[in-house]
Length: 110
Image (cartoon, rainbow, N blue to C red):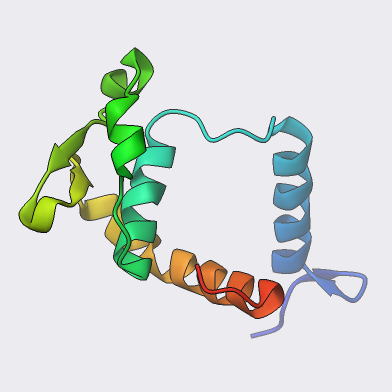
């Protein structure tokens, strides 16, 4: 099967570049909705850290409660986020890779 390409650049690469440019053009740089909550859960799974620090648990805002980002004190007096685990598990490989890249370039462990 012959690959379809415009010039010498494959169509898949062209679509990926167009999608990247579109995201850069329309993204305002913030994480909206409950994506931040899911990312905190994922990062907690990767690093073994608490999903909520005790300081965050004391200063909870209405917006945190609205998106389901409220702390629950669990086993060993650790704070967890009362949220489902499905999507954070899907985000796990990407967060693990990003954590390793960050450790590599910063020299610190997260």
